[in-house]
Length: 104
Image (cartoon, rainbow, N blue to C red):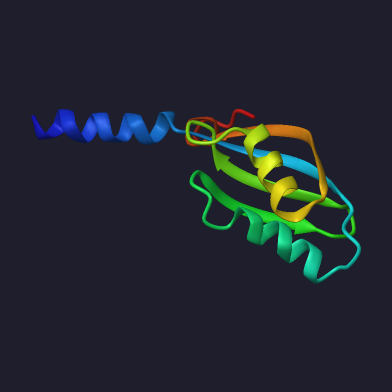
């Protein structure tokens, strides 16, 4: 019985889908405060794991659990909390299963 529980736990971990989306953030004027505002807008949002903002490219890279939050909600949250125009540029699926078996 305990083996079954352990197997189910690992299957859940392997099937969890972590997604990384890249957003174009238009309207940032400074290299210090504006990226920090975008990162702060997503801090504490359920499902968002990481957020990195590059001022030079005007892009925010956000890693999140798509079973909890979707990419449109993330874009709306950034826009509402910062007043920057945010558009989704691309999405890179990254699951542990794909990483383990070398699939992209």
